[in-house]
Length: 319
Image 1 (cartoon, one colour):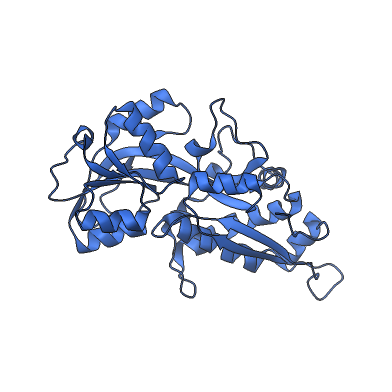
Image 2 (image 1 turned 90 degrees about the horizontal axis):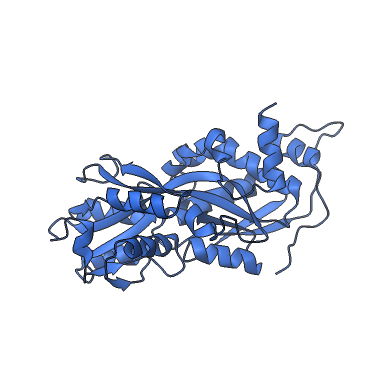
């Protein structure tokens, strides 16, 4: 898929238009349309919600940019679509992105780190599953195919080792089948809180199974993308604080997008993160995970290089 980017746009022109700071002209420059596709995630996932909010704000605040979202299985599906040229931007968890030698896939770079996902292991409150090893032989959703949940939950089970009867279901499908007793537990690598689990907890008592030992095992086996974390007691109705593992999420971009365009996209993300986090716009809900988007952590993309346009934006913030 070719990029419909039109003629090159200077950074000065983009930023002047974005801020309305025009020199010697009473109107904003008229740029050719830039049509971009942003890969998000499955139904019931934070990726779907935050991806939609990012697309809306980029379309509104970057002159000439029109961003449409593309539903997907999530992380590894998004990486595949980016490498194939099917999309221009995509969300992914850092562990699914980094290859065995610690590098990112060729042709891709990061715009920024966004927020951290937490690995949830959810069971109904009446379940006999009390700890990770109780998953042995149980019916467990490992997330949708090509998702970050699938990637990380398979790693966790491999380090266990626990042999579960794995099912590959989206966030929404996992919550529904868990509620109906068709599976015994579900993994979900996602922001906190995540819509599918929130809705389930509001209607039925649930529990989160601690994964602190699994966090230590991941950190030891795969240094870099993992850190011990806590899902707070305020996240889900009736569920106490639970130890688990966190994984950063990044916004990826194809390297062939112009530097000036990526600069303007980066500026929009950090300028409007608070709006995305707190305001409902039209039929879209607020995205509380966006409160975690900030300049200090945004530059921390581990071994994944920043796109030159994004790197230039971060350098300008230091001046």
